[in-house]
Image (cartoon, rainbow, N blue to C red; front, side, top):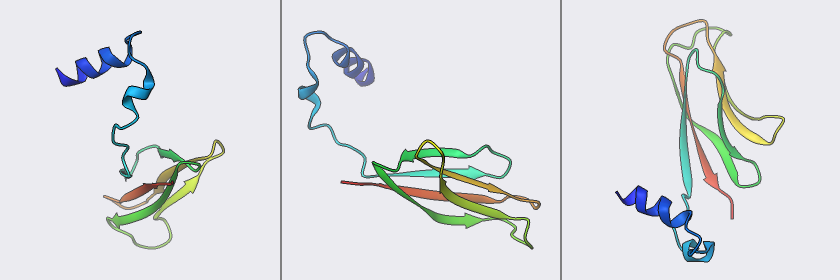
Length: 97
């Protein structure tokens, strides 16, 4: 019900955006990538700083890799590759001010 009311207010012609200036903005966001998954898009470099926060799974040899990189559109992305099983990575993005 609360989500419906908020959405109704956001799209109301009688409420301007300055009424929502004090809504909390997330200061950080976490993301997870699992083996076999496409790269996970995260925040834009102008607004967020992202870094790996944990890795897990079977890392043996040079076939396993996880990374946080910036794509051609300026977004951070979390991705990886593996020839083993259960490889996973987590990243955290911290909001820039």
